[in-house]
Every structure is written in C-alpha cells, then in structure tokens.
Length: 263
Image (cartoon, rainbow, N blue to C red; front, side, top):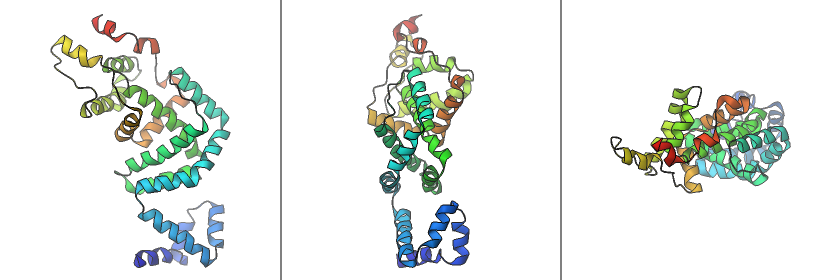
C-alpha cells in the first residue's frame, strides 16, 4: 500500500506530471496545477481509491458524484430528448424520459461499461471519464437509451417475430447476425426459449411462437451480458441519424402469431 501511494505521488513530479496533465482539458489542468500540496494529497488519495475499487464500486461512486450534473445537462438538450422520445413512441415503447429515467440510465451506462471491462479493463474508467468530460459522449446517453430500449423490445419478441423483423430489413444478413442470433442464443442458454425438433411442424410451432417471459431486472442483465455498450450506443445513433435504418412495421411484426404460422 505505501509503495502504491509513493508511486502515485511521484506522478506529480515534473516529468510525469506534464505528460498526464497535458491530457486534461485546459481548465482542469490549470486547477490541478494550482492546488497546494495539502489538497494534492486528497486528489492522490481519490486516485488510489478509484484504482483499487471494483467496477461496481466505481460505478456507484461515479453515479453519486456525477449523475446529477449529467442529468441536468441532458435535460437541457430538449431537442435531442424530444427526438428520442418521438422515436420510442414510433416503436410503441412506453417510456417517459424523465429525470429519474435519465439518472437510472446514466448509472446503467457505468454498470454496462463495467461489464465490457471484463474484456477490456483499461477502457472502463476511460469511458466514464469521457462521459463526464465530453459533450459528444454525453449526447451518447440518448443514443444508448434508444438502442437499449429497442434491444429490450427484441428480447421480448418470439422467434417468429424475429423472423418477420429481420426479413423486412434492407440488410437482412447483417441485422440477423448482429442482433437476432445473439438474442436467440441468450434465449437458449438461459432456457427462456428451448428449441425442439425442427422436423416436426407442431414442435417447431410450440417454441417458435413462444413469447419470452422475462422479468425487467433479468431483461436488463441479459442485454448487458449479450451486447457491448458501444454496440448498443451505435444502434441508437444509427436510428437517430437515419430513422429508416431500422425498418419497422408494428402491425405486421406483432400480428397474431398462431395465424401467421398456419398461413
């Protein structure tokens, strides 16, 4: 422990401090350089605690320390907020982008990033800091919300509805491989949908039209475990940029499934 603290204290030596502090925004760099030694100790202690904490503890701290300010900034972006709200309505998703929902999603973004960190641990805190420091990253909160809600919707679809959805897409194969196959794999390994013999019509019908039954908490866990933060965010971004990037026909996709199978 003392050795770790000594190493971090050494970061404030001139040579190393220049390379690190230069990466900060000018105002942050000016503030850090102006701190007297008594306050620099506090910064170093916080750095040590953050590095030693688990991703879950980091997420909790970042939520408590930053979410209120981030929510305030997102609520000020009325245009983007209204656009995303309109998109959710077009996809028949009942979600009001209230302050509590935004705060919940910001915390979830941290938790989801922590899940990604199991594969790329060095990117977790970096992604959280980008969200705090970058206007562009803060805009991604709305992209993430839209992408996540759409993937949740697809997780609750039957496999017949999946088939109808991907068959009306412009790039069927890409959509199938990127979204549908991972969701159906998650259905199988979690015993939400258990395929039976494909050779017998009625066996296929039983699981193919089965509507997944998943609790809200489990649904969030499944999406986080199945898709990375970047993929979810990019999904929402592509739709906000080009609504027609996801072809959606609610009446066709969700028509009575049993009739669809027997047609």
